[in-house]
Image (cartoon, rainbow, N blue to C red; front, side, top):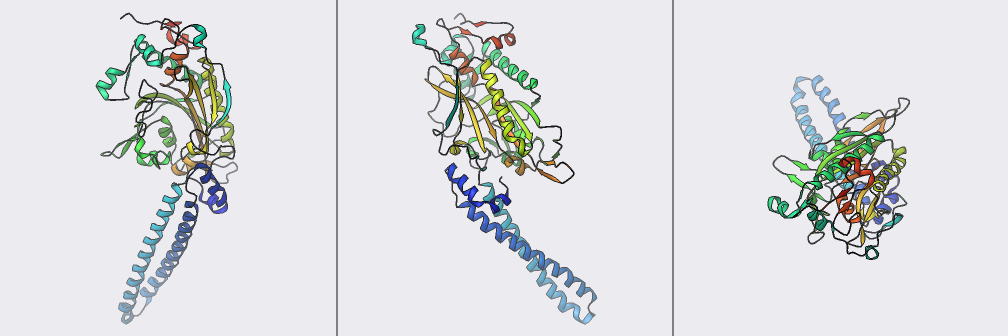
Length: 426
């Protein structure tokens, strides 16, 4: 949630952000109008309540013959106070609802537009020329089946479309990748976490995941809980309603969790293989820091993602995601997209977002200001360090003509020194 003071003081900035996102900018004026009425009604209520308290003392001190008449007036005044309080509360709730509908204020560098309007910041590595090598590359599912690593058929039998089993070397490959990512996070001072994958509504809404996309998450209605699509949600709620001491530096966590996504609206997209599935594993970095440190932390998270991609020896590009594709909580987001040979394009493997104070304001997470000058809202950031989808890029980019797959050198120690994944005998 954005700061109402910023909206009051700089409404044009918020309007411009909404335009850049391709969203309704008139909501800014509605917020200002309702919020002004709310403050006015609150002041009216408080004034009448103060008058009521004075009147109550007058009743207590009045002669007996006047008490009945004064008590009747007091009753009428109490009814008006109650009505004013209800009106003030209703307007305040409406102002909050409208304010929550506004996405985070995008950074000036963010390109305008939608999914296809990103800026490419960097391209690293060169895709292999399989034609020059003399063979047609297999896609990740065909390779996964040859290696005995992926079983989509039985995944569908057990759970339905977009589910799968990772079997044999496939399971080992994912665990190795996740452990490799965890070691990288530990090296850079992150605290490892295994997080809940069920959260309550306050945390899910606070993290910004049910404002406009509730149809994309799994909800357990009988329990009023949600299955999370990333450990970011649980980690955002980890310090809810707390005052942090950040004098020693940022708090950095690496959350390992299973993730769930309904993939609503993705009918017909990526139906083959494990690119777009309902359940996967992920190691997510999450940072609490001061608002002033947020941009530097964002660059730090991106550098770690690039270090991991480099260790996997994958060709990739870094993009500055356009405003219309950011999602509500993010003020800026960088994606790292790896080359997928059989698709002839780059696909997202990692994403890192600077959410500034948007999530923490909703979840009431603050920090002590140096010098004992009160508290202020912290900033939060997140970034992916490894996820199941990485297997797609690893298998396809490191495949060999006979269907075997070369293991990146940095990953070999996590697979007991295994250098090549060999097709299994049928």
